[in-house]
Image (tube, rainbow, N blue to C red; front, side, top):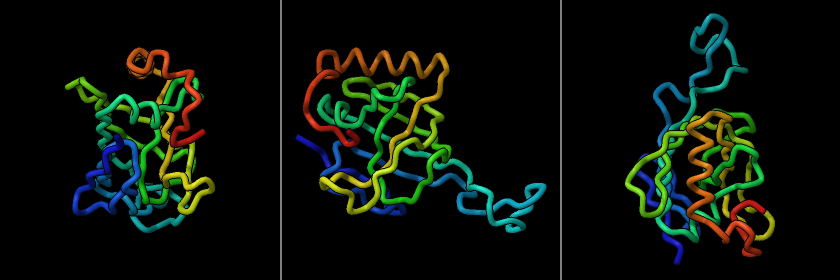
Length: 159
């Protein structure tokens, strides 16, 4: 059974059909363009600070739908209506089923599912884990939880 997302009042609600519970909170200073020498507003091409997303995955089926094994380092799909670009930095606090620990991940947007995507897919982004040791351990933990489900033919949030 899928559980709907539980956004904070300041965040737009995620689609009710999402497989994970997600809360999206922008980091302070997000949306402020930084120009030359870090002067706010002096340039239009700079990107905002990374957003911070809390993603609580409570069920194995939701983890299967969100996990992206196609990324060598691993990654997760996050249902969101916020606009991201490929390569944007995203900081995730990830909770896994039956695990009280929250795993911090400083990832990058590597997949975007736009609104009204084909196949009635949920709008959101896929975040690729970095190639560090903490992320390697997290990827192994996720794959241990999923076990034989990794080779399932069931559809996921991405492919």
